[in-house]
Length: 157
Image 1 (cartoon, rainbow, N blue to C red):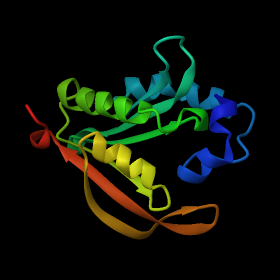
Image 2 (cartoon, one colour; image 1 turned 90 degrees about the vertical axis):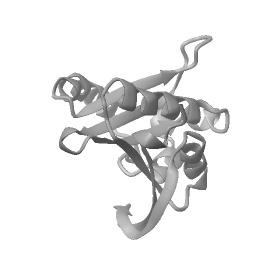
Image 3 (cartoon, one colour; image 1 turned 45 degrees about the vertical axis):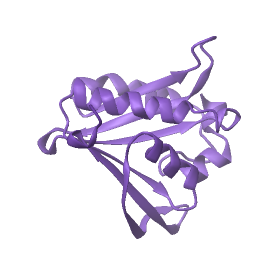
């Protein structure tokens, strides 16, 4: 995990992944998952390739129960970019959010400098809802972000 997440390209395209990736950070992050799930405010999952169990990346859903919504975040290791893994995982997590957690809305952000992530969100059924200028700060500079979302009623039957 540290090798994949520690790639500068991963850190550059995500809000919360640092570079360099510190020793022990992966273990600390994984160690919080059970408590977050038990408090019903986050679900974080490793993504593995079906054929051989190779770690591809991770996906998570931060749940806001009072608003029946959740925010999706993901990263895929650079060697696995462009192979559909992020789209497949995002679709599955959206289905889980609506069908098992009973959420009404799922949304996600991406930096405008990472249009591939926007394509993943669109392929997963999300719609572009707007651009937020200088909405987030990464490495000391403000970055524009695009917001995508999907409502329960938007899903095709």
